[in-house]
Image (cartoon, rainbow, N blue to C red; front, side, top):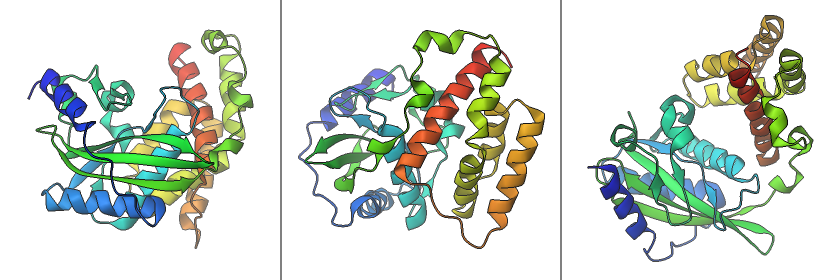
Amino acid sequence: MDTRSLRRLLVLASLAPAPVFAASGMDGLARELADGARAAGLARVAVARLEPAGGRDDGRGEALTEQLTLALVRGGRVQTVERSLLGKLADEMKLDRTGAVAGATDREAKLASADALIVGRYEITEGRVRVYARVVEAQTGIIVAAGGADVADDSSVVLRDAVAAPAAAETDCSAASERVAAVQEDMLDLKARYWAFRRRLGVDETAARADARQTIPDADQRSRYEYALASWTAADEVPPLSGAEVARLNESQARARELVRSCRL
């Protein structure tokens, strides 16, 4: 199926009836989507970044996507493909409020090793976040399941100081190594806890190693991160990150990754 056909199917899918809302929040939504995927014979899914219904990015998308991904992994009904391993798909496949795909090649539209893509959006309603999601079969673009959930809005406390500077400053490579190190220093333990928790859920450690290489160029700092990761991995209990912590971590890592890429660190 070509990209144009897939786009057309996804646009038509946006006209589907409103989903029934899950009674138990994100876990209930994940269970509903996973059961629908299994009923359609789809074993491996990837979760695309949830997008704001109004089109304006308010910083909640990454945190909500992470919550849904972890809920799917916890449920164990389907295998969840790590988004960072999907490469270009995760970076370039953007879904607007209609659910249309933009900029995906035929190969990317097949989602590499995933059988289906979970796409969705969210909106803010009376102090809560309402999430809508659909399971789209990779080969046909047909929706096999849909659902919705109301979840608590805990992302309003996301720290914004890391992105307060003008966007143009991101490409300024003066003292880039020191700036990356400063961004990462406060995040080392949080980052280690994040990947230790994902390992415990069965996520391949390849993703953690690739992430460290891309975001922590300083060898000494990377060694300290690896020590923290080993400590958390060996701990009896690894608490999952809250939505606010996930959003904070994502913002800092995006800054670090952009500096590493732009300044060739």
